[in-house]
Image (cartoon, rainbow, N blue to C red; front, side, top):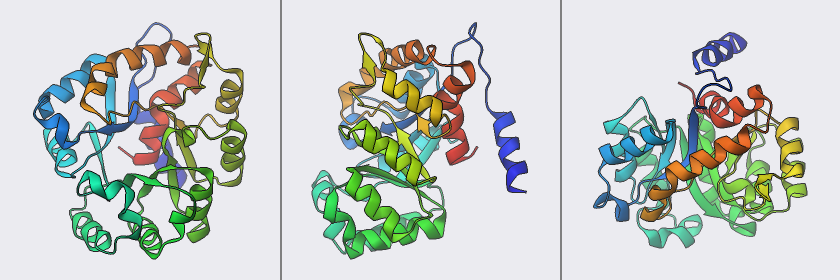
Length: 268
């Protein structure tokens, strides 16, 4: 049955050929409070339309922004819940006991597909708060979207080896050798590649990254990261640039990274 469902999801996903515009699943969009006055939910959806982004994984600080976008376009927006009520929670959430009841209460809405994107590094991941968040994710079949170093990713899997982790920015500045090692070690780890500054070299896809994409074509997702309002101005340019380097890959691999992996991970 699991295999059958996977096939159904795959067949429902848009296809692409060189003569068409490659659809995108953006796995890193924030609609934080500092963007609300500048951009209405409908304005954000128009930006996604213009960029050819068919679906987007969205979180926000506070969470109300995510819900506003979801209500505006439930077929387009994949909500995830950040453990941040205010920006001050970014550096303290992993040791703040009040975060757990906050998450438990919000998760009762039943709309979220993940917890994150959250910041977590090194030994921070060994706190009881983080352990409870991992338990919540496992119980709700939710993806953990972690902005973390390799040590924290390893610590999350040490709590529960079968959780699903989407590694924000593919570790940002983690060595690609460490990224590749963790992908080989954990088959429920995915990469989201926004802000990986080593992805391109002289305007072309870096050879090491291309090799990693060919080796793990079903484990890598496109992302933008609208962490500040001005990043919304970059959505179209980022999408155009991504389609350029994606065309250096075989069509099927490009389609997986651009859209299919996101749709498979988070469902229709």
